[in-house]
Image 1 (cartoon, rainbow, N blue to C red):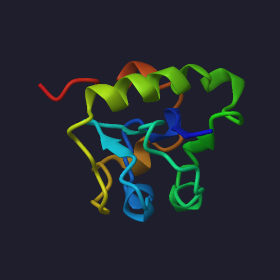
Image 2 (cartoon, one colour):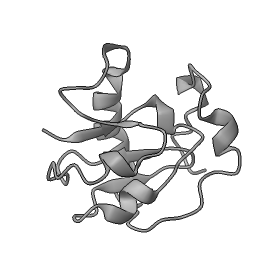
Image 3 (spheres, rainbow, N blue to C red):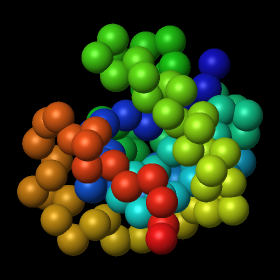
Image 4 (tube, rainbow, N blue to C red):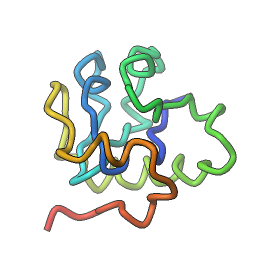
Length: 112
């Protein structure tokens, strides 16, 4: 089982979770974080660190967000050189976006 970052993270990108990960499983995108399922050791440290409750074990992801399981794996591969293991400031409008849904259409997949 790996952990999965879901929709709540989009346009917020708090990084407290990445800072506590003991194995550098987090990857950073322009406005979203993802967890590499092949690096994740299921330690659960990240879950309580996420202020927007975006992280779930893959077998507990809410049904409406199950597509994020595959999306995390895909983006972790695409962003494999973008390991994040330290806390950074969240995105400037994180507070504004914290309770806005749906926001999958806001996900930026490319750094270009």
